[in-house]
Length: 107
Length: 177
Image (cartoon, rainbow over all chains, first blue to last red; front, side, top):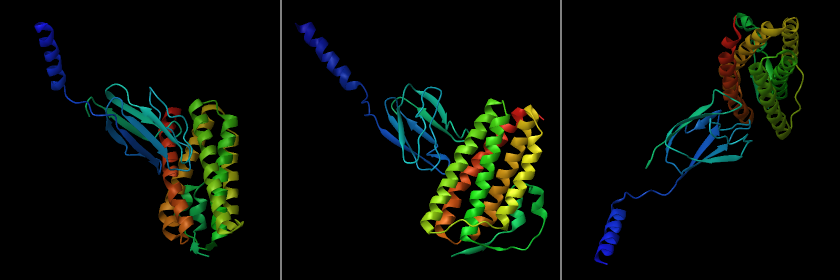
C-alpha cells in the first residue's frame, strides 16, 4: 500500500514537471497581389493554417504532402500542421508564388 | 470622364518591343477606349495561348498556355464588369486596331513553326509581351489613370503580369536555344 501511494505521488510529481503544451493555434495566410502574406510562418504540430484568396485569380497552397485545392476569390482552405520540419509550398497555378512553414515542437 | 495620354507605339510595343525607341504623338484616349485597349490586349494573349494549345506537345508549355487563357479571361471579366459598373461601352479605336494588326503579324510568325521551335518562339513572344505590358503599366497606364476604379484594376493586374513574366522566364531555358 505504501509503495503504491509512493508510485502515485511520483507520477503526479512527474506530471507537474512536464512542460505545459500550448493549445493548438489557428493562423491566417492571405493570398493577395499574387503573394502569400505572410510568406513564412512558424507553427507547431496540431496548429491549423488557413489560406484565404483575396485575388480575383484562382490560387492554391500546395506542398508535397497536402493541397488546399483551387481557391476562387474569397474562398478558404486549411491544413492541420503535421510533424516538425520545414515545409515549402507554392500555388499550383502560379509556380513563382511560394511560401513556407517552419514546424517546431513547442513553437 | 478621365482622359489620359497613351503613346500608341508604346502599346504597339506589346508585340514589337523594338518600337519602344520610336517617338510618337500622345493621343488622348477616353475611358471607353482605354477599356477597349485593355480587353483587346487580353484577348490577343488568350488567342495566342489557344493557338499554342493546338500546337505544343510540351506539358509545361501547355500548362503555361492554359494559365494564360484562365488568367487573362479573368482579367477581361473584371474589365467588362468595371465597364458595366461605370456605364461605359468599350469603344474601338486606332490603338486597339494597331494591337490587332500587330497580333496578326506575330501570329503569322508562329504559324509556320512546329515542335520545339514553336515552343521557343511562343515563350519568347510571351516574355516580350508581358515585359512590355509591365513597362506600360508602370511607366504610363497606372501613373496617368485618373479614374480610381480603373487605376485600382490596373494595380490589381500588375502583379499577375509580373508573375506571368517570371513564369515564362523560368520556363524558357528548359526549351533550349
